[in-house]
Amino acid sequence: MKTDVEKLSPTRVKLNVQVPFAELAPAIDRATKKIADQVQIPGFRKGKVPSRLVEQRFGRPAILQEAVNDALPDFYQQAAMEAEIRPVGRPEVEVTEIPGLDGKDEGELVFVVEQDVRPEIELPDISSYEVEIEEPAVDDDAVQVRLDALRERFGTLVGVDRPAADGDFVSLDMVAKVDGEEIETVEGVSYRIGDGTMLDGLDEALIGLSAGETTTFTAALAGGERAGEQADVTVTAQSVKERELPEADDEFAELASEFDTIAELKDDLRAQAERDAEGNRVALARNAFLEKLLDDLEIPLPEGLVAEEINAHLQNEGKAEGDPHGEEIREETERAIRTQFVLDALLETREVELGQEDLMNYMAQLSATYGMDPNQFIQMLAQSGQIEAVFGEAQRAKALDVALADVTVKNDKGDVLDLGLEGSASEDDEKKAPAKKAPAKKAPAKKAPAKTAAAKETDAAEEKAPAAKAPATKTPAKKAPAKKAPTKATAAAKAETADPVASTEATEAAPTKKAPARKAPAKKAPAKAATTKAAAAKDAEEKAPAAKAPAKKAPAKKAPAKKAPAKDADA
Image (tube, rainbow, N blue to C red; front, side, top):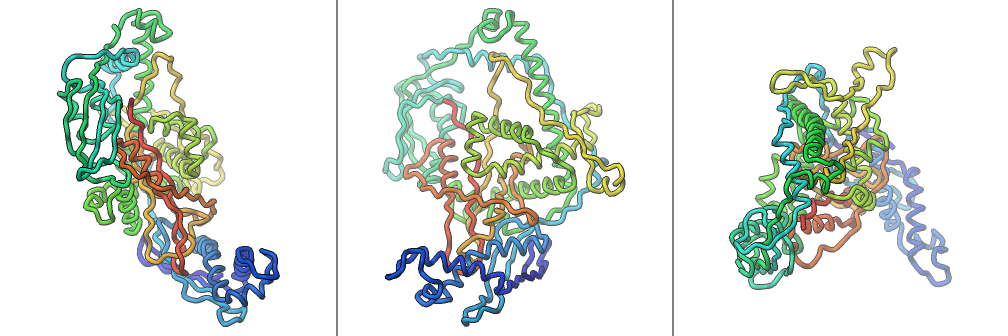
């Protein structure tokens, strides 16, 4: 096979590929057998029809068409590897010549691929970098916040004879209608005002509502086939309750913890706050370091990839392509893609070893972010075929920490902070001193110290909405070349999160290593509209059809990886 590369721009290339007939021949044999296995011809057992008869009955062009469509993904992957490109997004492929149509076993399969690629990024001298962060304070207020959270866990709900206020628990019934048509009804749902886990506008509607009273407000449906449509929502408060907290005394300390006095419990809570502050310092330093890199580097973006991510985001929200909301999220999407490119560049230039324990710790952290049980979260990732994607994220997270170890981090007072990170030699360092090259020791992923049963508390988790791949390309083909090394979607999530790595996921299809294909199961969206944000996230996960398109054009249709679930609503 011969591959010629033409660079169209810093982020796009054209591959002109020529495949000799001899290399296509095995695919022709497979296609002939495939057709023979699917047809029934009198006088022959199914699957035992001679190849000559199959060709006579169905024609050589039909067999060649099947062979080309089946072989294109592998040929594309091989061409990308030979060209040493780093693809992102979906390729656009056009077959210009098919050999053998004249009945002769000669000629070449010729196809042209236009592909977005990751731009070349020249990283600056990281060791010269200096960033400043504001250290999180561990004071009496921080301890009191933790103590109050623990008291809430042991609080009791008591009915009140007054209008509902922020923080109250309301048992409610709700009916959503669009143009007079009832879309969804919920009854007896317990909801805490201020949580914001159901329809927008519900909190405002409930405040001031007494038990037995009803009000109506307008809100956009959060999911389902009618997602995004404005609905008239009628909500009735069946009961209003407030949470009474126990007194913070020695008796409470004995009840809620392993300690005998409230003073001992507060000391333990302070120790927890200090451990969390240490982790927060690292997270703040990561964000500051990444922000500086993004400001200092000029990173061109593949417009096709940006458009795919925006369209995928709109699709997940039930909006049509071209919706004005797409321009509202453009800057956020572009920043997420740039962040991903920078993280990939760091990973390429730093020596990173990721063990099983590192991966498990990373997935445990993600599960906490999404408010899920770690075992259930890992099982969900495995079932949806996203373990490989999370492995890549964990590698980038560690590469960021390895690079951060070379950065001078100061607090707002000018003191240099020791974040406890261990660096690794970069490729440039290795070239300068090859004789001293040795595997660098990696700092193991830190586990949060075990908390007492009483001292555990629910950490606030930032909701994330990684965008899935949009299914549009220029010319469809029967099979996607991403079958062996699927491209991954960039999460259109803000990079200002505590972990800048977990919120981005755009990667290239690695030209040097094939990965197994992952197909998302094609599911049908539920008929009714979801009124909770958690239900909307579930709806978005179920819109990932994997389909074949007829034609000999672009082998570029790969089903998107399912996104991680949104945080569940509190009962």
